[in-house]
Length: 598
Image (cartoon, rainbow, N blue to C red):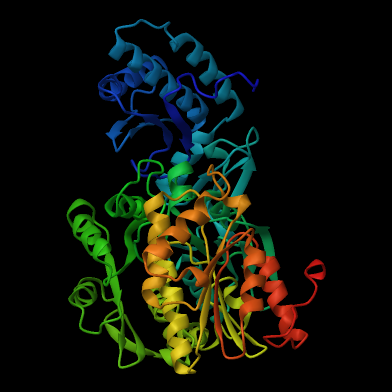
């Protein structure tokens, strides 16, 4: 694109994207455009958008297209469903419909784009032969279908067939008797997704299954014999799901399914057996028309669109937003819901057991799982390494979620018990999530906590541990990415300080995660909020990077201290350095090893 060429045909268009799978608006793929809405003319344009979109889709022969135009705070989203072989054309339709709607609101005329769109759609169809009939064939037979820019697939795991675009056969030529689906589990929520994903995968491996799983660290296939890394990085979107589903060694897939991927591209699968929503908390407000907890819950509930009548939706009965979501789903959809709770007497858990036979609770220090109406003991939570002796209450909750989810997907209680007794004993089991290091007289907690509830859970765990060992001081590194609004960032600092008055707080700058903010703005905001909360000036400072902040806190530390390190930008470098300190038997209060050799 030329430097002076606009990305979109109207400056009020924020974003336009293809939805290749089930999404916020329905099960059908399509396109969605997000637009600025700050004037009365723009609001009239949003109201007119479905009519303009319908005119263009009818010109293309898309008579079954559905349309949604939704106002929000300062913006709006407009969605149209479209055939799988026309999703690029659908984005052009969505944009052009907005251009026409703005012209309508302003009383202007614009040239008819329908002839050019017909040409574009014909060309796109030629590049994607048989895609629609393959999708229909898979849907008719109840198999998963997935598609990206490179390939199309039917079935999943050991029963998958995949073809590159241009080489896909007609549905009649597919050996459908060789296609099948493996069990697929979707894990979503605001916090605990990665830990829950890893736990469910470990429970399946405990019964000998080759398990593929995707998370914010990458995509992996594990069996008793080997671990294969398919990709590294954040693969919580449909791309990670497809990598798991297209690996023919996989016998079960566990897919971390984040908000961003669902909003940007939809789900990566059309079927799943079990989905779990761990919790809902304030995060990423202001993006893609998500401004409230209820909006966020609606997005997380996209996973319900691929559950069949024999599936299970696992929900947290201690989360008020999910309780309200459950009430809505009970009236709007036939979704089989089961519940877990930290309270053994929670009525919703009993309701789920009565209706569907499944549930999980914490009772007298034991994790209890009900499957098909029969209760079983999955062990004492203080003997589960992932709970840090029971101090990590949020990981007790994650263990409940994972145990019920795994049980509903077919894992016997014996394997759940074994996995919970093992998982977390080695740091790599749950890398980046409540990793605990002990060296030099210090205890150091490393975690990915990135929103107020995540910070609350991390700081509460550290404070509880500090109290148990009579630690005199707790130090914290604090920071976040710049794609949160000011109030969410202030809430991060406010929440951390509300847990315990830290003896030292190092606020970190992360240049790689500024997300449009100028350098210095985010740390200054966090420091200001800490000061408003009562933090003394001599306890708070700003460091130019995450690694520098960790080094500064280590230099401050003395034997007996507890350090809390939410780590986002340089996790590998930080954990590598901590391990080096452990191996070299460095002692708190001594000079740190040379930075350049870290």
